[in-house]
Image 1 (spheres, rainbow, N blue to C red):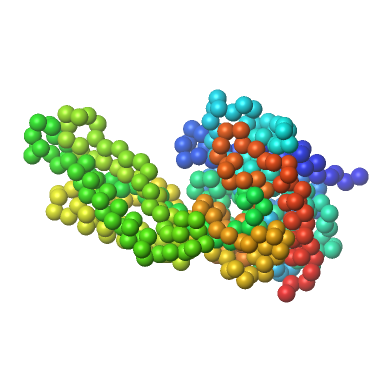
Image 2 (tube, one colour):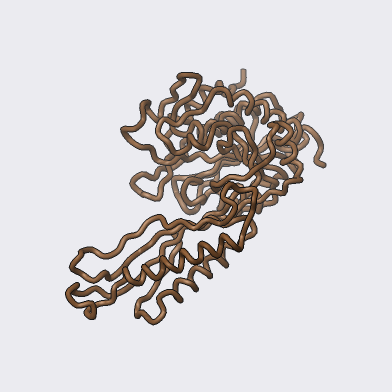
Length: 387
């Protein structure tokens, strides 16, 4: 008899037990190849054609494109394979062991978002290549929690090709069709150190940063007035002052100071224009001070996502979930799939409040409804001829 994919709980447990942390801290960062290979092995038993695509930017990381059926159109069920780091000592359970307790599955990645990949495979078990009029594609990506390099490399390849995509981030079964973008920028003021007893012996970078902070707060208010979208809980682009460090000792004039900021643009705002405006305003803020400013990207920017409200997939998930498609404050790989020509929505089990938290869990109550939604989407977008 041919091999079959394991049970849903076994798959979730296997994914949780396979660490795949991605982090900007190299000492914490891990590869995801073991997760991708595990998914491919299960999918191949169901007849999927599996391609493991190593990332050019990370030797130990890869994307997986698993395809059942042929032809134009089709539906992508997408999820990222990586997790954030965990807080050692703050978990009541082993983060890499699936714990079934109190009608919840506990483990790192249960909500965000390894369980969705197992659910996608479970949903696919009832379908066969010969019955599909359009392909079903399960996409597993790398590095979403940091650089989104997996999605960026897929966009460069122009793959996968499909008409529709569902990304299973935890939305508590309520569809999301739009979210803000994300820029993380470092602003460094360069001065000249010297003995603190005489200000003329140096040029204090902290004083320059004071001017920078004033300019950023002014810009923040201008952005609030200039841009507005009521679908978001915070209906304007936000600018957060997140981290600052300068100097090394109170008896030395501060020779350098660095500020890290986060900007969340609304859909329709041009990221390159924002970055150019930031550069212009920072330079202007320290004119005639003798100081200099350097700005660099802490990570590549993620564009905002905006899928049309009247799209076929949006309307389908609204009917299936009985929820209007809304907006999210976080970022996803959605805009990259949209740019590849796929109408994309974010829809998954679990709640975003569980993501990135100790004792992360997935409620059992969301599993069966999510599975039924996925099966109905496959019926609608893969069994019927392309419209």
